[in-house]
Amino acid sequence: MMTYEELKYRQAWTLEQKIDHSVGVVSSFAAKTGGGIFSSFSGGKDSTVMVDIIRRFVDRTVPSVFCNTGNEYPEVVKFVRQTENVTVIRPEMHIRQIIEKYGFPLISKEQSQYIRQAKHTHSEKLRNIRLYGSINGIGKIAERWKFIIDAPFDVSEKCCDFLKKKPFEKFRRETGLFPIIGTMASESRLRFQKWLKHGCNSFETNMIASYPMSIWTESDVWAYIRKFNLPYSPIYDMGIKRTGCLFCGFGCHIKGDRRFYFLKENKPKIYEHFMRLENNGVSYREALLYCGIDFPDSNNQQLQIKF
Image (cartoon, rainbow, N blue to C red; front, top):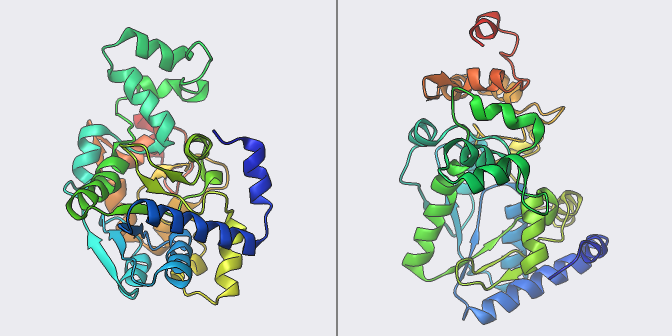
């Protein structure tokens, strides 16, 4: 088990120390897996840096794998296509099917999972944990989001499973290669907890993977890009701070988040396409309004009348 203090200590390292650390993590992971590795490449700045570290300092032949869900920014897809030695995989389900069956990706992966379980579980024990927390007071829905349990639509974390996790699991089974993933512990509580439990390399049977950038911060990523004059997706120069799926609503409730405003202004056709997606007859646009999330149409009086 790692500690929070250890993470803060390592996050304070210099860029050079973090590069050396990441190289050591990847090299160790490759040695223990017999060299059977690939880099999970999203086309975003973090995985772009990770791929460069692997190819610059470890092994130039390590393949990268990009999952084209059909929901990425066009600028990201174009950047990926310009990158050498990238294998493209695709999910078996379309986002429309996933949202229709499971619900919208709102609030956070953790909270949407808790809300989904509280709403649909047949286990009274699990429902009580989601409503009131475990003995330690963890695992419950935040008070501010409990009203979504009674919403006329579902929310869910399942889109990530079907659009990203399952395609990569299928690739791993078919090739025998193990993933190197460019996530950081600072990005979310779940990723922080994963690092606390496993460190940068995990060899548990159901999740053999390497996370060589766990101790990095966003400022480190940009410092690396400047240091090596590394090409990156131009989407960041347009004002976007995070990439990933265009429709994703995880974190969109945070004050100052402008992802949907950017989407409507710069990709209006894509914006309208996603806002029309439905679950239980409720559109994404209506679900955002119901949850009190700020987005371009939140002042639409017709929508407000419906709810």
